Image (cartoon, rainbow, N blue to C red; front, top):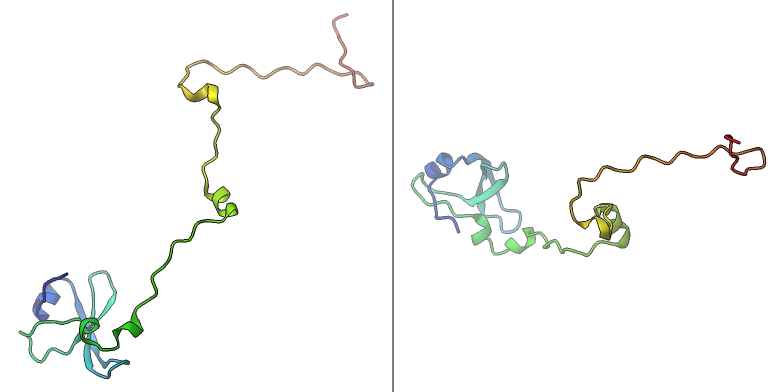
Length: 122
């Protein structure tokens, strides 16, 4: 957990105060700050610049209303598994690295009008 900071320490850490409002859950006065990651953060109203900043999520009696449900990891469907899986081009014989050159493509024999291969060198 982060140590408590004053307003000045929040500014030095990269926080920016963006305004004031009342909590929608408990009506307490709060100060809104923007974190260095550009996320809004509510803090209890600080009476003076030297008072410690306390996250309103810690003191609000109804803070659970603002918490998100944890995201549950679900196993992928078969289609998702196939969609995002790496294609496998290896065969059992090619498990070791080889420097052999590939065989040239085979030359197809010409066919006669009956579809039989003919020997043109007769």
